[in-house]
Length: 332
Image (cartoon, rainbow, N blue to C red; front, side):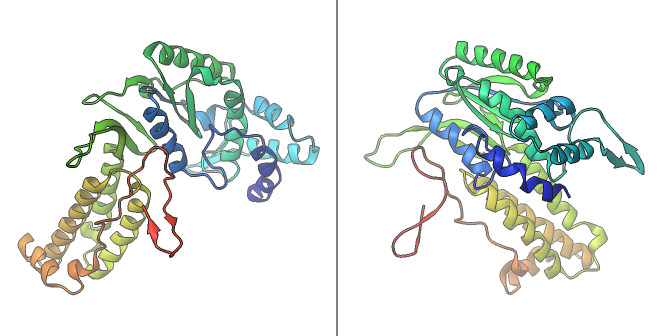
């Protein structure tokens, strides 16, 4: 029912959404949002306000959300159905919990409702406050100076307060992008200003690089450890490798658009180590035996996918997607 209702107001609001909003919108992805800091830093915006909205999906007031919907939708049956969905509640541990605020996180229509409500923030934002990039409840603002960044954070806090929301204190900070300095995390990537080594006869350049954040790498390690756990020893090692490949392909498909070669190599090597350990436990042999099986098996590493050579580095002024040329080959 939520999916059916989403078809009605979705395109109506999509026509109004602004370019600073990227989350859960058709023909837009996280990588489109990730390209904005690359472009902004190349133009000299080196001060970053990093934050996200505290408990965004569960804190949106129902009545104010309905008011935002009524700005574009006047059909009463649709509004009545939407109110019923907001009041339906969520079942946890066999108990139904009904809240007076929020949209169910994970609900089909919740991302659209989140964008509808936060569209008020997007409309009130002034480009003079900095370049705003919002992916649902995750935000960054690219600024020229520290004073502009401090003003942007204050402005952002005031606008969220008007909506009954607030930034998450633990994830809110101002970062200065400089060579050798710190960076910021956004949409699973860690961003940091680095200087290229420079080839012979070329001048080194400073650019905003990104690679998987520590939290994303830890998530990958945890997932691989789960897939190769001792309780699955009755399964064939080739089956385990296939399960790991499914995860690695999906994980690498997202993080390949960055300077992620080293991180991908580390995760692939960790997966190989876990497979060797799995084989050694399965046969009650040493870990060196597990590595020997991987080395002598055909296909190599019992079919574990290779992540070498798939990285596409983002560049300012260039589209992040691979574009086919006239001959049908891929350009990077």
